[in-house]
Length: 295
Length: 252
Image 1 (cartoon, rainbow over the protein chains, first blue to last red):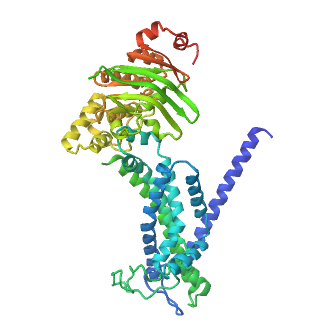
Image 2 (cartoon, each protein chain N blue to C red):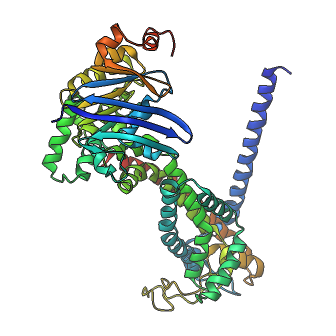
Image 3 (cartoon, chains in turn green, brown):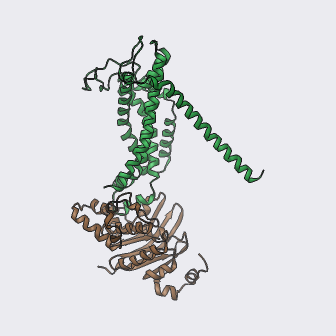
């Protein structure tokens, strides 16, 4: 075969693979949205679920998902960024850091159900935090932290070396150089990655089954004191998230409209994750422009 | 001030087992331009980078010998590298402005070193931009990103940035090799101006450039300092044969 023919075949195969992936994605999204979107209305998004009657909503679950996300991120972001900065800027290249990197890699490919069991044994039982939002957030931190660390490390490493040297050559300390020269350059990709990680948290179910629990107490959305048991903000209460809810009503839902609710909830979930992704790109760009030109 | 701005004594730099710079002793006269020339990999950039301890960043890099600046051996581990680097400006081959506004690129250093007054910072920014002949080109858009400038302007901005922390010495690592001829000419002209106030060490691949701008030239080869003399003499009547060969283009 002539090199030209080979080239054409290669181009054709690569395009076909790309088209296949696009087709799978589009049909999946289309299917979920087509089945789900018509069940979504204001009532569905805000009302409480019904156990045996039709007409239940996903209000508390949606709130739980968002609140859990915020809690997780509050724990994950500082830890992940801190460890990422260490790995990229402070760690000497030796066997120990190689080992840490290996651990991070392994941890990031852990099956989430295993993380959930770990959470049940260690966080829920041993530490006695019970089925609670906090347990869920900690389990998701285990799940998410490796990604945050790697993300931060890679973002910082991709900052050109001359940027760092320029900061140091002006007589700045290492920390000042990292904080004021390198992080602004790396931040947009860190933020983008963080939001993508947040999307993953939002859709996670398995790790939460045994940690945040599968039930939600009656919430009083007029009580915002985090110490009250019925308050939505109480981190020590059990909380069923949207993804867990989908799993539950699909496997053991008794309401007559359970399939419709599952479809609607799935569509909401997918739309939220899509919004996260688009938002991440937009926010990363805006942030970059703001950090680089403004004062 | 001491006539010798600074000098090195038996300075060696190792990358792991490999010795990149071999026991070099050189003195750098105050307010003159010293050009370091030699073929790629001859150790001239490594030598330059050990003058402000920039090689500290490179894993596996080890330095022996002494570098005396202002009566202090900066290779001493007890040296305060942060305050040392404030006295030594550096310019790289690729322009590397901070991802900040033009104003911030310059004000950033002095502010870190304790100058807070807005007026004082404004004055420093204008002063540094004037010294680098950039003021008239950018004075109306100081709040724009430094990255929006052309390559030559970016390089002058980087020079201006290094002047803002009041160094005495400027280290330049092929500052014009990534620029077009017009920008190169501007940088060379600028170096001629700057040497009235600063001691300048410049690494260059361009021998004509070395001949044009430097007062003294050092020829490096395989980590050795082969010859170091007045530029005039080096280019007209070098005392070593390999210098002559290199300068006349027979190798390297």
